[in-house]
Image 1 (tube, rainbow, N blue to C red):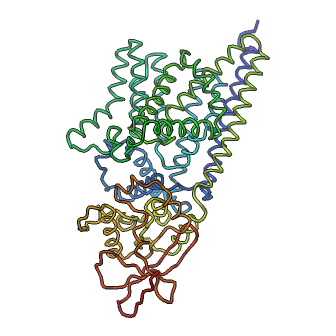
Image 2 (image 1 turned 120 degrees about the vertical axis):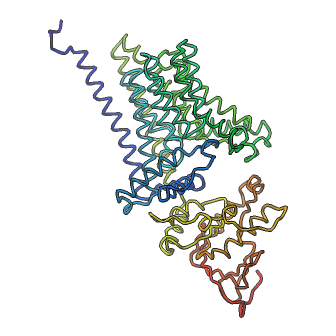
Image 3 (image 1 turned 135 degrees about the vertical axis):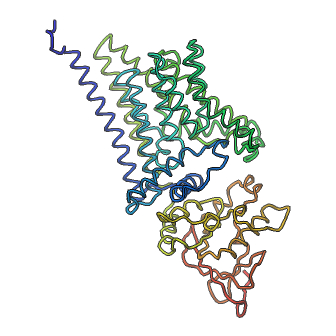
Length: 565
């Protein structure tokens, strides 16, 4: 019998287990963050094209000029502006502290997202530990650093890591509410913030609110739902008051025409993207096995039941919306619900190991060793896969062209980017400087609605936008025109662009109107709507298989002969 003040052997063993587990979790998360941040700082990982770079550009512009107004779309769009506002505030702090000399602002934004994801992962690990002990925390750490889609998002400007952080905080407070009746208001608040990052977080809030109602905890349910649903209610009020709907789940089909696909095609897309690519091919078979094994147990495990059901119904709800054509098919959209599912599975599986420990210490140690070693191997393999893929996500030819353009242009030089379906936002970021806000209509590939040009009417939207682009070039006289090179152009032409053509976007606003100048390597640009008699000459300055950069020169009309191609 242990004497007073002397710790018993089982207590000392438990304490050492907790110390080792805490060190393992910290080592996994810190190593993950260090590898990612080092890759970002070295330039191996950069923002990708399209939405990712577009968000970074918007955050930078707001950081420099906070007077840029928020549109009504902040309240009504599927993708609210919560993360870019957080990113803009962070960039303002970076600028204010004078930290902008060493790294580009896009690198700072990726580092911020990596830190946010690592913090969210730490909270999920702490929550798993709280529900099922140290082994659950270690397993959750392996899940956090090994699952492919979330770790890819950890080095981006996308909204999901920010939403994951707020969902993790909301889940922690919800567990407190279930345990001792405290935390309903705070849980609702964190899930409200999650909806400011991803609108579909409302599905998680709705399920958790329903759980409180089923438990007949009327006061907690009322407080939780009143706070967590306030953003949704505010959106409806804004829509009714302004008549502006933006891009919502209810009308997303008007923008993307998803429902024009056959139902069988939509089901096949969901299966391929979310099951085959999202779980199986993306180096996640081990974690899929964890979910399959643990999910049936987690749905009835009182410790993780509420969070597991919230994750499951969130994922199933999103998949149903995709099949119904209410949302596009991106594999990242289900990451919030999938993380809760893996949390529940982790709690259930490690709880099973703990029950084995009551029978035999040897069997418990063997079971824990098998779980940790298998998942550790999977996490290591997945991390290597994600790292290699992230380092290849921006082709070297694109990086080379952006570096050339940055070295040969001034902050106030207007530029024109012609390849509408590819890397325009990426180039905007890479050629931008700290403290320099270029007018988006003078820098981007084309935003005719913001130029103020009076474009001749035409039934062909592509023709109208082409005319606007040509007026744009003549009005702003960009120093450089950046066009897709042969390799990138082939990729652009291979894309199914029906939705883009419907919106008036074409594969190239410039190339069909170029002629070679006789006796030189220069090209002559002949706009279909001419505002000047000057001859517009494009002088080649940079070429590689992906990108071609031309310097624009204006000449008098005399002496310029054209050689038809």
